[in-house]
Image (tube, rainbow, N blue to C red; front, side):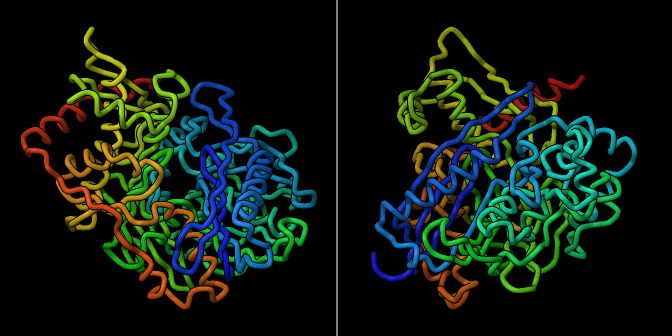
Length: 498
């Protein structure tokens, strides 16, 4: 390794990663470590914030060690994170006051239903661009304040901080000096007004959230502070942050209106850049902030699918049908089709375009001839079906037809899935040379803040395609398969509705 690098910290739903990038956007070293998932009740999902912090520190140090990269060679640190996951911590000691409620958690679904019945849905949608759903952070913050003894009083006294994982990491990385977030994460809280780009007083009052617990909203590319020397061995600027999906949009060089990408991770997320003005959705998509460089706003439409890669992890860890997630590709290739099996992975409800918190997972069409390969293939196909749903919704909202789809995330290494995605969409799917675009986006944002890259044109030149998957399925077969998927979704819908 020669010359300075950018260190990206990629804090995901199931693991923490650290990746060092060079000026060409190439990943030089990678370190990754999974952490525990906690399920205290059905539909509840939690993380241990201290474990996240310690794991993130460990992989950062490991990434530098593997590349023999001295801390003094790290020009800046960028952060990308699971977005709607939220926690409270002590402002003075930096110790967690709660566990983190994960974006997948459904504990506030009834609270959201009460707000809908009370007539608040339209106002929330108009201000935030979000649907009224337990997915987002605001009702999680309200739940903590209501159910954690002494927390509301501590919050009112200014002794507690609330924040999404980016805020937690920035606070810890700067030795408690910076309690900040960026617009992409703020816009996922259901407390942030897209039009004023500020915390909204009416929404704070509605959910009884004291303003003083919330972080300052700063641009996605800006120096927020510096790490203490004992963190990595040098004082390094913490200079960029964006929620994982907006970071991936940036890492795919989608800087202007009409540019789009789909990320395949624990869930899958389609984002379409819409420029400097928010675009409303009539098809169940979200209007959200895109990563910002400077003071000018940037917006996007998003289709959020809750469970895609997590379904493959469930086949691995829950059913023990595969030893490694990558095994799903070889198993799927052993059968010509699913034998009529459909897998609807609605373990925590359905996101866009359905927004059904009471849907639950279902495997349909089983016969005595069904094998593990059929079920595994059905799980992979479900990822592609759900992605088609949000692509069609985005096209209708934006009034465009996407000529192609840029893809990224861990699952894009699965060639079977990428080919089936191209087939069921009937358009090319483009896999970039660098598939770690979420971490790369965070690196670009941090590097721009410290002058490591001169501007968007320079980093846009780093993007390149590794492979194009062209559709080759007959139209009749494609539409018959998709009709079966839509029928399967109706069977899973509303299953847990009391």
